[in-house]
Amino acid sequence: MKAMKVLMVAILAGGMLSSPLLAQPPKEKRVRERIQMLRMWKLTEELDLTEKEAAELFPIFGKYEKKRAKLHHQRRRLLEKLRGLTQKGAPPERVNEVIRKLEANSRELSRMREEEWEEVKRVLTPDQQARYILFHERFARDMWRM
Image (cartoon, rainbow, N blue to C red):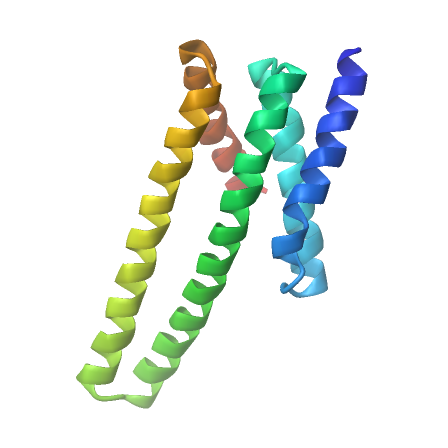
């Protein structure tokens, strides 16, 4: 039963999270998909999610992953532009304009994380919320080590 639940979660997560990845280069897309699948699988185990909880949570994750992917793409473009401007010795006004856009991008990512968290809290028990927070800290650290 547990294996079937995990398999179902993997299939659902893959379908919901793949669409924001279509605009990415093929290798980056595959890596991101694998990371998201691993995250969903591990999260399902860590929180011991019921089918009902998983059915409520995964659409939330999918919705915010699409927005997050768009903002991260925008951030990469802005960083490339900033790099080019600094290498060319561009006027401070142009550099400041890109910096302001990067700051706005960071604020939007932060606001979105808070919004996502509020939705997640409505689904999870306090114990699951605590395990969710700890899981994400550990998962992010493990991903950086790879």
